[in-house]
Amino acid sequence: MSWKKWILLILRLGVAGVFIYAGAVKLADPLRFATQIRAYELTGFVGGAVLAVWLPWLELLCGLALLANRMVSGSLLWLVMLMLIFTAAQASAMVRGLRLDCGCFGGSDATIHPLWLMGRDLLILLVVLALSWIKCRCATTQK
Image (tube, rainbow, N blue to C red; front, side, top):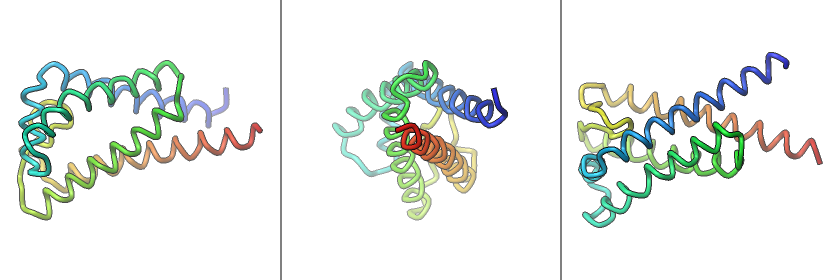
């Protein structure tokens, strides 16, 4: 296996691990995650509750698909959309001066500076976008 394939494998498995962990932690305490969603002041009570149940499963399933190397294109597409939404929500909270626990990994991120949270989200987004671009590029060259 070439070094490029090793790097892609490590990136894919790393992203899989991040989203499996994030989804599993949120599934363990959906009420806490619903409270964290509501703190962004972007959804109503029902919207926050629905997202608190739905999002962790989506993250977990996308992570498992990447881990199993199945439905990779669809999983990456979902993860790009999720990361764009998460990054926009974080930016919105930062602009509005909200200092909150992002809810990303279940634990308290309240002590982390919002710029670090934004940087982390952007880094994950860039990795997912790079994997998506490479997957798309490989699919078109094989036709």
